[in-house]
Image 1 (tube, rainbow, N blue to C red):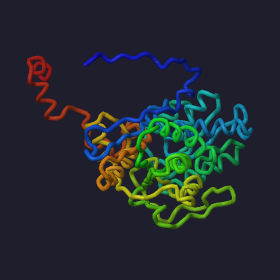
Image 2: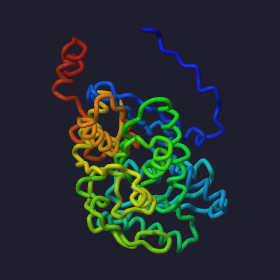
Image 3: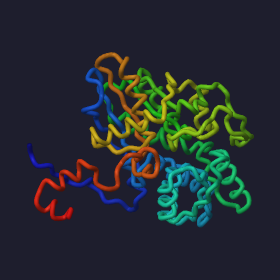
Image 4: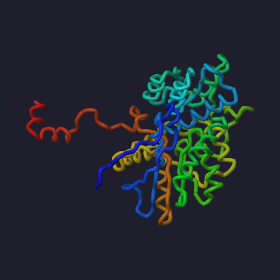
Length: 358
């Protein structure tokens, strides 16, 4: 084997925001079925480690262009974490104060990361679910004259995925097969933006959308009511709490509604939270790819599809973020802090190990 070398990217960056996007597509070599070729798009390679970095820069720069965001104005948004972290990075780089509202049920490391990046985090009762933190953000925007990022409604959401994520996929598979694209949804921006372009440029690619089995709100057929600004006016009656953080708020976002109305996905498949956890662990331990429960859930669905896929099929799976966002969640349950019996035995297998143990 030859020694690995690197030669640099051939450019220097003016700021961290210029490093958003162009995330790698990586082949799965050990845990995918042999009759298919599976790739993942690893969004943890974004500077703040999730796909929501794209959304954050898209929203802020669109608002700057149309004048709805004024210099120095406070930005406010409701988020389960990744959008808030992305916005905190963008706002820090551009000089905007940021206030985030987040249900207290989401992982502690997410709120600490946002605060570390300079944001203020207002927690809402977990019993009020996603609709509660969403309502709080709207109240704060209206009461203080702050800019509401509106990730669930803004056209900038799907637009940034159409102009970046989708074009990256087309370029990475130029001249090659791409039979399946698999993703979950939070706001719906990824599936809507990518599907807009794939339907035009790669109409043979089947788009598979997934949602939590115990919060299958799209599959229920019920669409929550919205006001004239496309904001939800109620929580979805078929929502139940689930462990796939970042997926499926307790309402159907307006951005996702475009995919529903236009048939932008070919199949909608539910996935159980424990399956997402199991596949996230396998991706880490057997492929060295570190992703969270949402990425594991998308991959779990991809493995369902792969079982019945024709031989030679090629599949791309979105992995939205890094597993480090889930340290305090069930994803890391059972991961020991101290040495296990096996590790202790290894330590005791040499004289220094025995001395250190005494």
